Amino acid sequence: MRVKDTKKRGMRRRRLALLLPGHNEELIIATTIHSAVAAGLKIENIFVVDDDSNDQTREIALRFLPKENVLTVPRSGKAQAVMLAINHFNIVERYTWIHVADADSIFCPDYFRIYLKHLDAKRYSAAVGFVQSMRGNWIATYRSFSYTYGQHIFRRLQAWMGAIAVLPGPVTCFKSDILKDLNFSTNSLTEDFDLTLQIHRKKLGSIRFIPEAINYTQDPRTVSDFIQQSLRWQRGFFQGVKKYNIGLRPHMIDAGVGYQMAESMYYFFQMLFLLPLLLVATHDWRTFFTIMGADYAAIVVLAIFSAIAARRLSILSSLPYFYVLRFIELGVFAWAFIEVIVLKRHAAAPHGWRTEGRRYEITTNDVSSLQ
Image 1 (tube, helix red, strand yellow):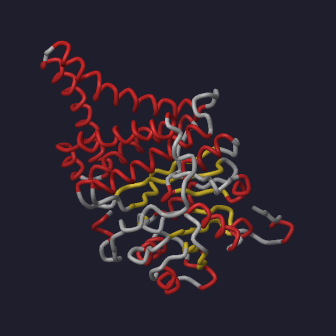
Image 2: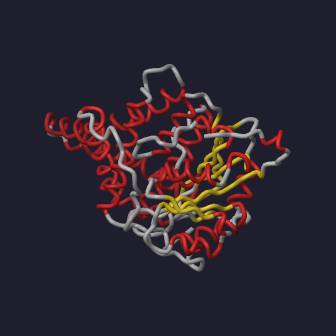
Image 3: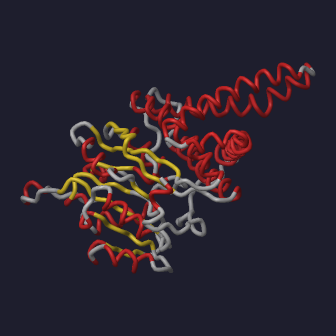
């Protein structure tokens, strides 16, 4: 990626650009653009790269954006489309920061005004906001629960340690000067995780967490889609662990990701192996229910905390079925580990988008009810 010396050319870069990559996003892209403007970004700083959509994505984007801000590329996949757009729009020359967001993003009312207050190019090379689920069905409520406590507790801890492990697709901002050092052709199922590990491994700088900048994203509406999305995330996670030898170097990111992986593995074996073995060996239901009761009590405390933090009492309604989806995720985690690490599958990721068929229409009138 070529970077020109803007100072020598006398060009003053603007502060922040928003890039929306998408494929077949006609149901949501207009609302996404509207929400970005309402959140404090000017139209001229919003760009769309259409990855060869066969619907009205490009036409709808052109209703709101200048023609020179919309690019259509041959089918490339998200990461490659982003790289092509960065070059085409001369983002590095024109902007100090670039925010890349999914085309189903709904930004909170002050999202970019908040972001701009916290971007410090001298201290940070990237920044990440707060991902929240749109209000929706029971799966979205469960995701809202896990997103809330996961970011308020674990991501804050990662930020303090300097070991933020993933820059999620909807809420990530890069200092444009580091783009030349990033390889967007990650060949990974989760390019956001791969790019994050590149920043750490190449020591490109610190990552800023901005929890006040909230982006609302669509979640799966069926168990099948939930499983498929979770499989992609976990396969991509283990691709990154394997590719960057996570856990084998004395770096903070290795400690952070290693702890995350060890905790999931321990919980998996405790719940699906150790507890059943204990029950079979002792025939003591009291011990079984004591352990499960203690675990559930901790989950209830987290649910109350999350409901208060997110201002969503509906999160409490996920408690009756929490273990159903949690055990599905644990099974997916174990299966992805076997596939990628043990059986050495998914060494390469096919180009494409994993959101086709899962988008649903949201109008500007719906936004407030979904936040």
